[in-house]
Length: 339
Image 1 (cartoon, one colour):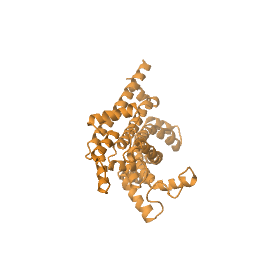
Image 2 (spheres, one colour):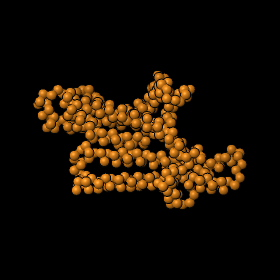
Image 3 (tube, rainbow, N blue to C red):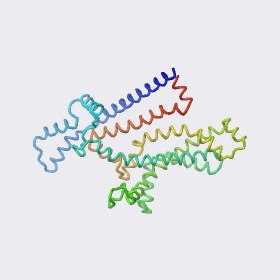
Image 4 (tube, rainbow, N blue to C red):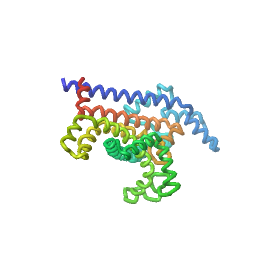
């Protein structure tokens, strides 16, 4: 019975996983194709405006539309795209670099986004969790109240606004850090210490803006979790045994607060591709955000849909992993799963 309950739980979660990806992507597909404009006709017209003679313009537009998978009705385009993605694992050609496949641009931009946002998310979580635990543990002190008030203020400021403030301070006023880009163009792109230093220097401001925004959010949530734990009986028992306050904080308070916060971290990692596109655009950082800006302006449907599909899959996969692993570490969830 137990094995059957676990199998049923896995099947339900996997079916929900597949249905959620399909539903979210279908809505996004319809939305993007409802945006007015024809990129193929606009491209041919721009050639004509620059004095280029385009013989058989209508035939050329029709050929481009067919190669890009944009011919036929919306339902036909949808079925054609699903067939290519699910059966042939082909995301189609990109319009911005036709006939280069859209996946090539994704492969170039994705490592920059994962490196910047992934590292920023993990650093923000560690700092926010530790600081939030200390603030909650010493909740009546002046310093704790000040940090809590500061966290409430900064956590409500959008990351791109924090990025603007950092840009004004460190790039234009103090001139300590570069304004835009991901590395010094004069340095050869290779796995060398000089190139790594350049990447760190150029990525400091984008990463710092994301860390400040996320960290104070974790401070608030961890503080709330710790305050709710302080009245538990096992803490009273631990204190009555004469354990040092530091050990009580590490071994009892933070360990019990870590489970829900670790769940939140997994969700945050899933949202890596979605959370800071504006920051990447602001710093001209060559990640998914900058790529999305370029392709949305040209209505490059295949690349837009590829970015959307990857973003949706990342978020839903993070949720699925939480659903699968949480019963293994939390008996309460395991009991609910069996029910």
